[in-house]
Length: 218
Image 1 (cartoon, rainbow, N blue to C red):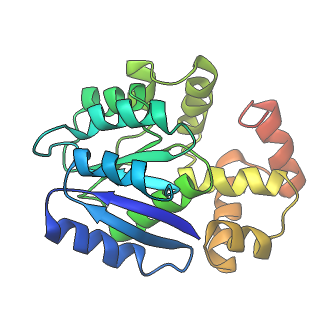
Image 2: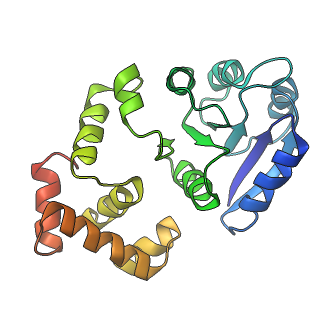
């Protein structure tokens, strides 16, 4: 169970995000606060959450400054932004400050939930309507990561499809993959077929071989 701390100065927003999170049995909100200052107090005085989800524009300390400070003190905690602001420069600044993910309040529920689950599994996550081009433009990841991102974009492979591809290469079955990334077996099989179509692979072995040859996987 991934424990989440919500940080947002609007109660209605916190309530809405909690409702989304409560739909999944692998995620739970352990606390919510309305400022970065209160979040720092909570982190100091309580058992650490696995993930902190924060807004950017709040009274007092802003979310990016909060992450920059908190990540130095709690490096093992995941921090992600959830904001209405979708400016590329701000997204880049968030990642440079230590954010592990950036989600949009304007995104659909499935996208937000999927992003939270990916973060819970230890991945970085940037919502798909931003795309990896922001990481490339603002140099917020290593060149190797950017190269992989550009190749994924070349073949129009989505974040979810790439997650499935990684697990296929590790030898997991469709049922096992479905359990790991919280999708149905049918959806996983659909992603596998999409991957084969996009890479013109004849079968799973051909798909894995293609992924390594094209350095999508290493």
